[in-house]
Image 1: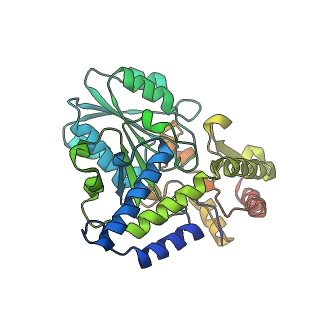
Image 2: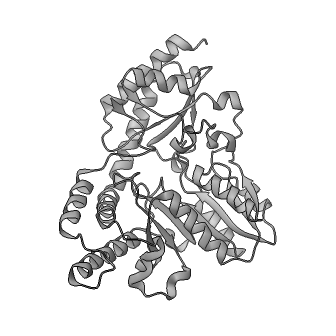
Image 3: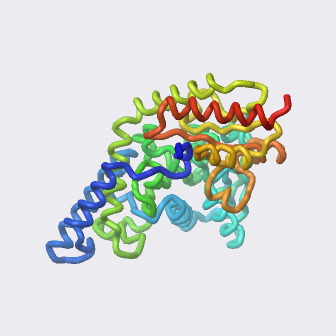
Length: 373
C-alpha cells in the first residue's frame, strides 16, 4: 500500500530507530538515580533538552518532555491559566481535538470561551480575533499549521497583538515543528506543543515549551519531572535524532513537497470536479492537500483509494475516529454537505513522484465513475 497520510503519523526513520535501540542498550539507567549509570543517562537527557531548545530558540529549562502533543497542549494551557487572573479564553475553531476537549474542560471550570473562525484564505481571522477581546481575556489558543488543510497561521501578528494586551498565547506546533524554521518562535509564544510521531520519531513522546514555567524555581536538572515519572530516555533520544535530521533538510524537503503538490495538481483531470482547500503559497504547507470531489463523500473516496492500495484520510485522525466533520471546514464556514466531501492527501519522506501520479490517476478514475458534471 502507498502511504499518503503523513499528516496523521509517520513511520520511524532509520536514524530514530538506531538511536532508540542504542540508547535502550547503553543508557538504561534511571535519570533520577544518583549512581554513575543514572548520572550518565541524566547527562544524555540534558543534552537532548538543550538540543530541542536550540531548534526553537529557547533554553533547556523551558523544555519538558511529555507523552505527546495532546499532553503538551493540556499541560501548557494549564500552566498559563494558573498564571492568569482572567476568565476569558479565545480559541481557533479549527483546533485539534485535544484542544477542543480542553475547551470543554475550561468551560466546566467556569471560563468563558470564544471561538474565532478562518478568513477567506483559510487562516485565523485577525479582525474577528481582535473584536472578541474583553478586559478579562487571558489566553489565545491557535495551531501554527492546520493539520487538515495545511494553512499556516499568522503567529507573528497574533503574538504582537497578544503581547500588547497582556494576553498569553499557546501555539500547537505539532504540524510545523521540523517542517518550518521555528528558531525564533520562543520569543513569540508563551507555550508551544510538539509531537515526535509527526516527524519520523517514536509515538508517545513530545515536548512542551514554556517561556516562563512555574517550575523554574526547581533545580534545572529536575525540571523534566513535570511528567512525574521515569523518563523514557530511548524515546527522547530517538525523538531528538529524528528532529535533528528533519530540521537539517527543511528547505530542500519543502521544495520537494511543493514539486509533488504541483505534480499532483497537474495530473488531476476534470478541474470542475475537484475543490482544493488551500491558501496562498506563502501561507500553505505544501505537503498537506485538503480536497473534495463534487457530490462524493470523502469516506467513499478514502475507501476507494484504500481498495486500490492508497492510504489517504478524511481529516484529522482524532476527529475521524469520532465521525466528526473536519474542524477546518467548520472554521472556513463550508456547509455541512460540502464538508462531508472532504478528504486529505499528505506527502512525506518516502513519497515519490511516481506515487503521486498513480494517486492522481485513481482520483481521476473515481471522478469518472462517481461524479456527474
